[in-house]
Image (cartoon, one colour):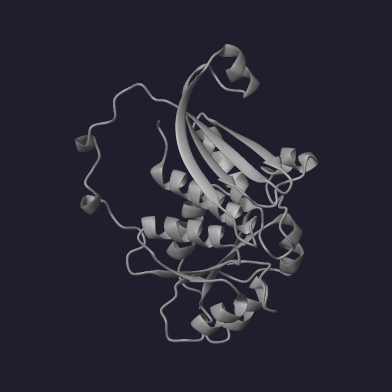
Amino acid sequence: MLIDPGQMENALLNLCINARDAMPRGGEILIDISSLVLEEDAAKAKSLSPGAYIVLRVADTGSGIPEDLLCRVFDPFFTTKPQGSGTGLGLSMVYGFVQQSGGQVDIASELGRGTSLFIYLPVHEGHALPSENAPPAEDSPTAGAGQTVLVVDDEPSVRILVAEVLNDLGYKALEASDGVSALAMLSSDLKINLLITDVGLPGGINGRQLVDAARAFRPTLKALFITGYAEQSVLNSSLENAIEILSKPFSLEELSRRIGDILSQPAAR
């Protein structure tokens, strides 16, 4: 397979978190991997090319998904979770990553019995690139050396995903799940160069209110809102200097670029 290991790890993490959330009273998560060869008809039925594939399955014994909703689970922001319990961003990111890798995602579910999600990834029959072709990690410049970013989101999969991108870029990532705990960190003497926050947050403080409160004692704090279309109304007033918006869904490349752009800007005076 020719895939990005970090994105594969994040995809598996997202699927496991969804499986866990589907079993509030407990249950089992099954993860397995197999190989198969799809002939022309079977491949066509899955919108794939004929050939050999690795299949990763994540299954749970949870509540299941109604049949009429199965066709929508990969839509950005669609979620079967109660309001305030998740954005639905995880599955759309998994779908995008698999599609970019030349694969396909399939899902099967039964109410009261659980859900199984299958990731089909094509087998790569070439040789792996020799490791000497890649520059040593220690010789690569570290973009975020010495800078700290606080990530605020109530959905664990989003926080972990953004934090991993930050760590890969050399930044130190701090995490908070709500506005109250984030404000406590921002009012401390912790060094924080950038705040990345969802707009809709639990606990009585939304993302915009969090930035406004934080700037009372960190007037030059830079901020990036990650938000869905439905939350744009919270940001209807003009944004101040060093505050930007990144709309969901976004690619990891776009997230990396925006973080670098914001932190490279001179501090507001």
